[in-house]
Length: 386
Image (cartoon, rainbow, N blue to C red):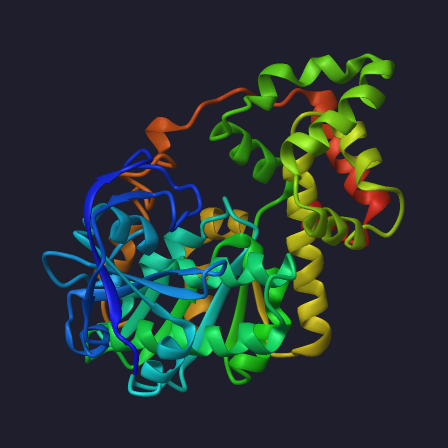
């Protein structure tokens, strides 16, 4: 088996609290490569799988000064980024071969899909506090990287399935030994490859979390660098709708295959018309549509699914939590810990923390345009939209 390349980290090239997608070739300032034996990826508990480099066909690990419990953090990829002292890389072939030496994914395995901005990080924290035997890992980066690579046709579904299986095995390998049940909380777009995930893990339980479209769009808008809510009135001018819709598309959806995916989730009209009717935050609404539509497609091929609304989690927390845990077959042995989680900011310490979100409320006309456009151009029922 080939050697692993190890690099000392001399600096970081993005903000330390940033939650943007990882860029394995540009996130760090690295020293020269030092060859080490592949067994370090299996035998050293301070080494954990961080991401995948699709372009160079490499698995990317980080080495940290102490052992990380990735089930105890809001975003695993961000914690690894912050704590890493070294980067280690190996070929996909070595990665897949080494994964065979890891523990198998447990039978009690679930995947938490979501629209984003809907309380999934809170549920992740609740699950981890429910029992010492349960582990929920939040947003492991390989799953997101595989999603984008498969959608953008950089890899085929067979390679995606193999990488998904290997990634999950390494996640299990790095968990404390008492954890015998695993939930992976994915980033929102991962629902796009539910078919590959069903083939990789045919017995997993899918759970889908969502929030009504207007509140989801508003929540994304609060953390957006574009401040769409501040500029929404620009598209009140009819001519501006036509001119700026094309600009917004290029600004927010610059990948052809993702644009094609968005288009396929509509039942009528074009994505340009969709964004033109809504304005600056139209891409957020379109993204919400794609995730909900893919959830409906999931239910058509997998009957054992469950969805949970953010609004129910807020208004009926104990009922919602009980339903989630019953579906996932998770016993609640630490009820006091579970209740304490409800009062905390689940994303504290990141750029998504409550105190750091910006508030530029969407006006009535923008909200009406979102609701009407989603109703007219999709098959999504009103009880999901409102």
